[in-house]
Image (cartoon, rainbow, N blue to C red; front, side, top):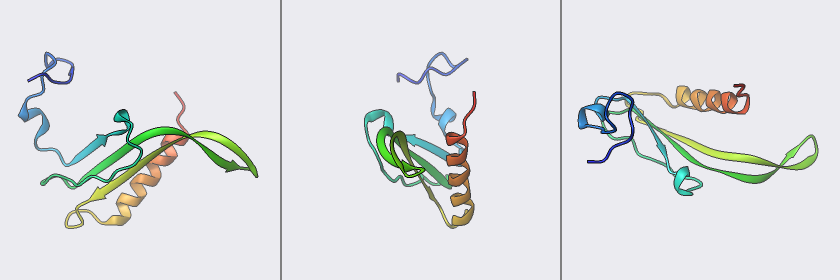
Length: 102
């Protein structure tokens, strides 16, 4: 099986490398998908869905400007995680992306 280039793994991902996690990130934005919702695979409790970045008009200080807009959504298993912490996670993610400083 051809895998993702993982440091120290000879470029091969084995089943053991992708099992036992509790959180997944799914990026269909790299395939041109703008928005989608994912379903977590048990026993994982959450999955973050990342859509593509697009130029969109936004209103800032009463002026229309073109900005890069990316969609993100989170789906959680409410048997393990309440929706409020998931919403705070998305809010914090948004803040960190909008205020990123290298």
